[in-house]
Length: 344
Image (cartoon, rainbow, N blue to C red):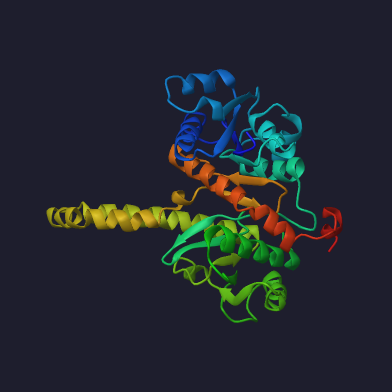
């Protein structure tokens, strides 16, 4: 097992669990011969879903869990009380060093709380940040933070910029990634107190390529590689991004099917259109890593199907192989304890 990247997958988390999660794991094993999966959840259900499927049984281990954390439960309470839940058991495997990464499509709040409580922050990291890749006209951009820190400090955002830059350079492969802060205008004097206080700190921060402010409308154009913000603004931007994509696709479908003329046109451009839209499919980029923890935590979309689970598992494996956590620890972490950094 030492030669594999070991990934603990919460089989019971997500709208389509456990069927989509189990199928995604099977598909990931077929695609990547260098991974080993711990599948945590109801053993009977998982075995029934695996029955008849062809996969390398030597690289998949079922770890029984008698409980499930739902979206309706208070995250901190659920993590504390449901110690035999599929999510807690999977994260515990990472904490104990038995797994290199954790993946779940379940409750975002519970994933975030569990990641901090059970796995823990890198020494010196003030706050971990949820960082999804978003498709743009130039490739992808990283939105950090989009869900972990609604009330952030300027120093938190500076660390987000540093962690995001490392992720984009060493995982995505963008040299000297452009960093921008999400704002209501491009002028330095604009923004709320958090943005105005953070802006000069980012300008002075060595090791990042800060280009100034970015408005939300410029994100899809790919004008920055790393977009820094607090979780409130980030989550609003992300949800608007997703909703706009759905609306545009609906409008496009309506236009291309409303008459014989448009149907003929649709048939002529179908292959090219499908190829172009595939590049703008957010599900093709897997889940969102929670950067800043001692072990990798990846949150997949709650409605993830098997394809997205497979991609997220592959994403997690490559993250571990490229030692992104180690690079963040070396560049951003410090000899401070987490408690000491909190006081800053």
